[in-house]
Amino acid sequence: MLTGGFWLWGIWQAALRQRLILQLSKAFLKSGLKNPLEEVPRFISDEVLELYCKRLTVTSAGIKLDDFKKAKKGLETAMQIYIDEIKEHRKRGQVEILYSYSPLSKNVPFKNINEIPKDAVFIGVTRAKKVFSKLSETPHYLIAGESGGGKSTFLRQLITGLYLRNEDYQFTLMDLKGGLEFQTFEGQERIEITENAPSSIHALHKLEGILEKRKRLFKLNRCKDLDAFKALPKEKI
Figure 1 (spheres, one colour):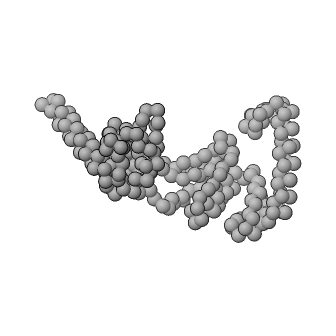
Figure 2: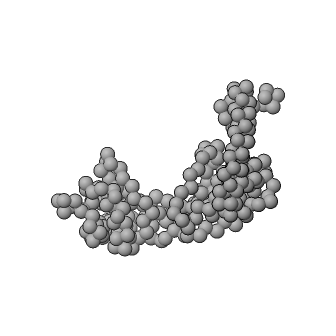
């Protein structure tokens, strides 16, 4: 009687596992994921990765990662899930499928600017948490995507967050669309906007002079970067 509940739970879990394996095999066949020997990927594990997100691991069965990615829509339909990412562990001959039973939100409400740490950029959200990136750890960003994909919106929120959370920051925004993308920031203190190539080249020369001065200052103080310089006692600078 004491262990009966445990055994019932174990039987239930085993039944769920078997049901998932059968469902997977059917989904792989429907999506055309099989090797020349007519074998489909085999189930390895299905585990909770974080809140609302799970990681399904299967054998690659000699099938290319590109073929898994091409079958993504078919797998989502067959298994009634939303796939966030498909990645490969080639040495182990395994493929991981990160998925959830609910879609990611297309809009992220952000009501409190103070949630952004100082010297950090708001990147976005997973299903469980907000993601931030420290400038000291990642000082360079490449924002890429198709037209209408949200690049300008992302840049504007990035600049806004840094501007409001860091009162000592100065900004030089080079907008080669004649200032159309960054007109939101026109007239703001600490923000300079260049609207064409000649003015941008002039701004770059000015920034280059500032960088050279800082590098000399760091070298005189035997510092590698800004964090090391900030850590120096004032009397030793």
